[in-house]
Image (cartoon, rainbow, N blue to C red; front, side, top):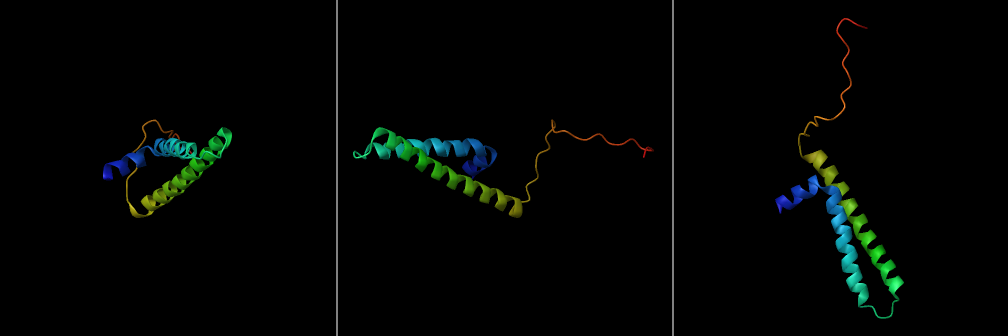
Length: 93
């Protein structure tokens, strides 16, 4: 379980995208059993259900990020490609 949580921390967008794809597939499968709906209505309902699931996932992700920032003293890795402003030379004003 810990390895899954760590992967989700490192790959937030992939995890959220996976939730959307899974939600879309599951809701399409469910809507195909609804015989009284037309095909376009099934598609729209599936998209709405998947978006609601994704929105919930985003809220949970934001809450987890907030919790991690407050309760875990993780040190951020230094990105060697991050821009660093040049330092002033000594003796100049």
